[in-house]
Amino acid sequence: MSTGLWISPSGQMFAVEGGNHMSTVSRNPSKFGYTSAEIDAIYQKYHERRGTEGKAREEILKHCVSMGWVRIRHYPNMYWSISIGDMTGRVKEMLKEWAYRVAHGEFGYHESDKYMPVKISSIHGGDWSYDKLEDVQYMGMLEKSQYRLQWLEHAYLADDWKPLADQVLEMTAACAAAAVGGGGTAPTGGISDLGVIPSPIFGGVFTGKKRKKKRIVIDPKP
Image 1 (cartoon, rainbow, N blue to C red):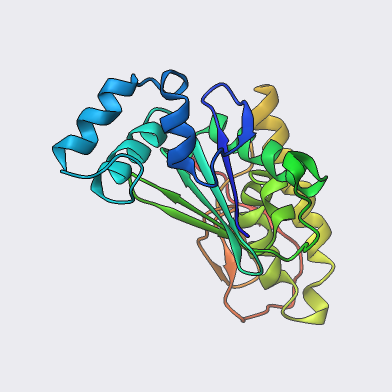
Image 2: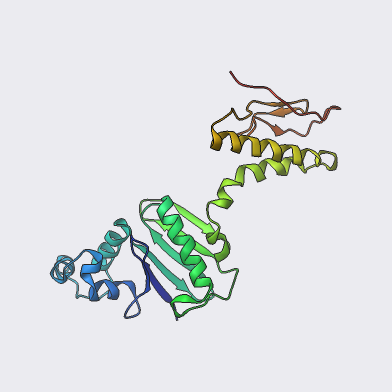
């Protein structure tokens, strides 16, 4: 049996009533910004009976999501499906809290499969996939470290380049400290003496060409 949840724009989380998201809206229209008459009018517009799945249901649920509601559905032994408006910082925080709470057995359901995938889609376009629920709990932290990890992959291509990794990490920390503290300028430019080409982080990635010197030199930009 699938599990459905709503997260309100204020961050309140609760399980759906009547087995699906539309039933919850239909039973509590004012909570979602509707009146019962307005819901009836939308169904009448599409010549559909209230409570049936069709175009009226699609319009109502899409409107709820566009107003900041987060719609979540669990498909057992498959994945978690999440529908959002936009992936804002606020939404990320709500999803991280949801992932933590469902992993600890709240809402009457405990996600015991730590490798259960999570698929997030925006009604305005955009999709995000996570291999496991835990990844959603650390959403943002993983994204911030993405570039640094990608760059370090190049540093580990050859054994004799491994010592450079610590130096790269130190420079990364220096960049972050300068950006946060505002008291200095983060190092930028290209990494020479290693035969490299520009990259998004320090201005260089390994080309596979290795020179004798292993000293990192930062060429400052104007």
